[in-house]
Image (tube, rainbow, N blue to C red; front, side, top):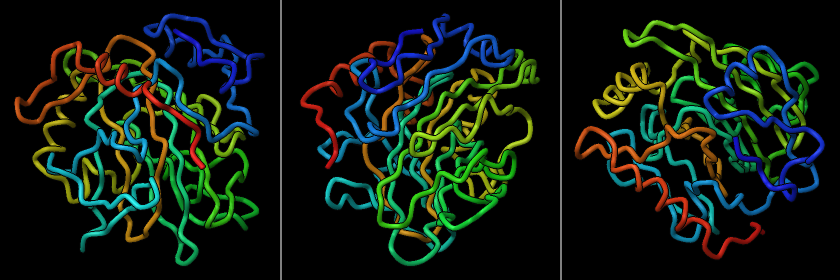
Length: 287
């Protein structure tokens, strides 16, 4: 596994194992994982990351039907825009297996700021105004919704930019789709660890996009994900104008690919590499 440059991650703690061995290393806790530096949350992506959204022209998201997104971009940020069913989600064209994920977001000054980040469309890192909670629960900011409470309350107040940093190891399945090894989520919110190799498997977050108000596009992706263990990042619509910026994924193996709904499969293997190369140009830290 390649390492994130020291400018982003704390160089004291590292994993140095092949991407295919990452899930085993995380599952048994053999090696500590590195942590994002709290004083450097909002920085350009590493050179080997694939940028999903940068506010300056790169937007590798589509709608839940595979069409052009209708979330507006304001001041360099995607603004969550509702439909009448709380399901106007965005789906990444990039599909990955094991990966590091970075998402920056800001809650609106009014309302509960409800949204979420779905890893593989099934495991939701909750976004919600929970800054004053003494003991955040399964539905509060930082939770893997319905599955794991955050270890600490690291939430900031509405109107402040926040950041999720995630090391995701996908569950493993046999050719028939049967679970043979649980996956793990190690995550930081605003530089503080909120999950340490939290296990994920058959049980998924409630109301995930593959279950709730799903579409043919998502159903196809879900079936394919069961077979390949490769899936998208999904940003949730939950009736609140949460803003998102500086979204990137760094695959930790050779399984990442660009999903093309038009052909029902993936683009050629070079597509992800081309996206990675183009995303390295003219990067700068967000304001």
